[in-house]
Length: 232
Image (tube, rainbow, N blue to C red; front, side):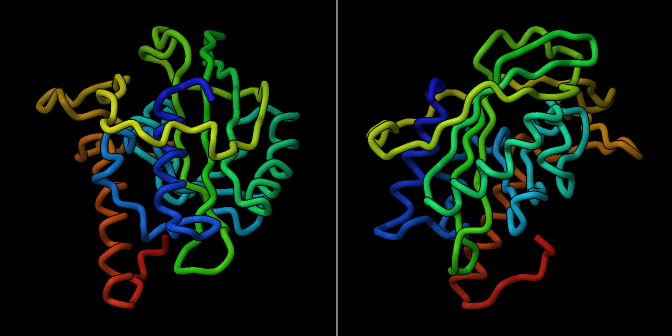
């Protein structure tokens, strides 16, 4: 892993396990990783051949130019990468170890950036892990993404992450990652415009707020021994 936030996420994942093979999604406290949430996501992987986004941070959606929730994780990967990823996801779930993906992302204008994606297995309400808590971080200059969205990714390398490779003892989180805003609402310039494939969708949340609200709901439901029916 190259990015400091990747080490922080894997370290948090390991601490949250509390002696278990993987943590449960309801154990994740968004306050502990608040500054990472805008580029974080939850991936449903009941079928490794059809992984889908259940939740995604606002800045990550802006990076791809549309709302990721409900879309296929494989849809923005080029052909050979999309064929290789299901096997890697399945291996990560089976071995209960985080997966680190190194990739090159390309815009429709052929500008490229280097990305690092962490996929950490989690269970949901106990049982075997069938989901991932993920994070995408830029490793190169973000300038090529200014005003542009990622068209596709190409997988360069992958690696299962072992505990001794993560930074467990970092006391503080880094400053919030730079948020690339594609467009702004004229009456509220701090709001990012998340472009959907059918209709533009103005996001009224600060980066990561939606994920934080959802995690809070999961935790409250777990404490009450009942699960909300959000379709998540």
